[in-house]
Length: 521
Image (cartoon, rainbow, N blue to C red; front, side):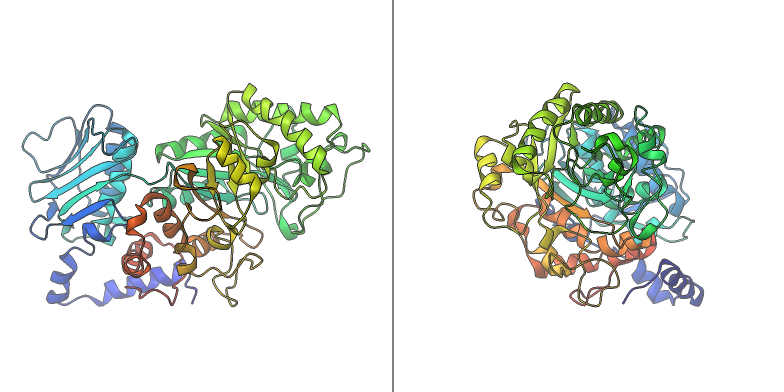
């Protein structure tokens, strides 16, 4: 059953208006979740039912030097619902505190953390601000779901007691949003950033150009955005990001400790560019605009020098806008590019990316071009044998795992799902959780996996509610695959922890799919 945000909000309001008896109010004050309920599952967690901490008007946030940004973020999370001042201070000075401490713990690496909740205070320790941020995401889950309300809630704010030691299995845990098939405004992208950050996702891959639309301003080729950006699937309204808007999205993601990876898909998936600039076609004639969802028919002109001027201009401008280390050059479904031409194109374009200080990532087809070992092929197929990917892994390339039959968030949950596609599979919540990146592709083991990414293609996705319905509850499962130790991977345990996330999503207004595979709370 699909519930709109308005319906969920009305339900919450009606329950509040009805009032609760004293016994129910007392029960509500007890912790909703334990340290053993956190998603993604921590490396280790030990609950202490006698170690609960209560936020009060006198609580402060004590932040070490270098922890100020995370402290301000935490304060911004907690103040709307509590109404407490929660000042950020360098030292607790005897006051009850949420303490953010930076140190040097070799066990936890750059993104790990240690979280301790006791009656006299809460401490998050990490080696970096990234680690503190991930620790804060776990801390959030130990508070009542009402903490996500945007108005003051008059209640007791209890943090579940215990200790967590945690660090990620893989370095990259990503989400991809296709803004080319349908355009999403900057505020919609930022909303998704906030939603995925809760589950320790650390990269946002933006699919910025495809056959149906071009979404990023390129000053040296201005009509790409102003003309090529007008269209979307089914003739829906298009749109594009100015360079200032894109920089703002990148900065916002960085404030949530998420790195943006921009993608310009090529040499295929280029009809929006080729319909805008005639010179990008071998015959010098602009192709017709396409707003259908076919794939594989477009190709840049591999033999033309203007193609590489175009590529270099786009890469130069996009690299200057993007502080992260990677540019995604696509490379998939180039069915209209002869194999020899495909290799020629890749071998010319990959050095251009390096020239502007970025590393290459692309769909796994780029592996056949023998890219530099710094390149990250992104595997999107169904698992099993892929000699090119296995050979790349053997040479030293890390492989990012995004199998379409498990990790694509645009796949329907079942045949009746009102959104999405089914060409790869019907992917229920359990299907999206029950796979292992280290055994997916023959010849690609644990040490050769860069991480996981959950792509969301938007042929049928038009609104933020649509994004939420397809991403939740599957995205937290992909995030857990990327973060949590393999030893913790257990569907029965996970579905119980996942169910306890539902009140948080209701409080946040997330329009999620209530899978019958989960006993929702």
